[in-house]
Length: 171
Image (tube, rainbow, N blue to C red):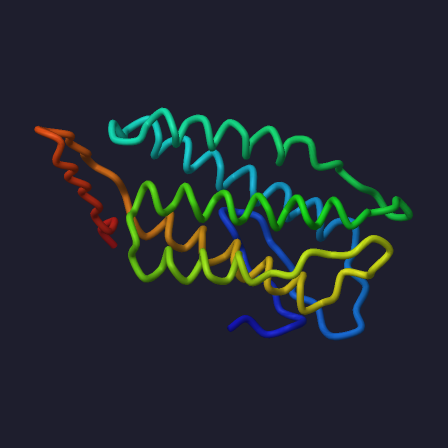
């Protein structure tokens, strides 16, 4: 659990946690967009190595990149609509699905998937709560940690048997 008022680094992007009652700043949304793009870049590197479900993974990543790139970059004073946050929530669910294809149903992926699916969509005219913002930041951090922890070194498809080889990087 990440403490409100603190920050976390997601693939080089510093994301701030907010306390109850805090206003979510334009920069917070821009940084979430940037973190999503970095995560997608990392996933595209994985997709370049895999041979199983490759077409499905590449198509999903392309769709997720299009959605992420379509998120507006906002400035102080700009309106940030519910659709903006709902798109981020949908992207996180899509990333969780891609993680399932890449890593299988391992515990870390199942946690990310469950947390992404439990995020509440924002209704039109509603404020984004610090709690929702922090949950999104926490999921982004978990995804980045997973991608930094595992490296695909080889994936073999042989006689309809999938062999997924994931090695933790040497420290």
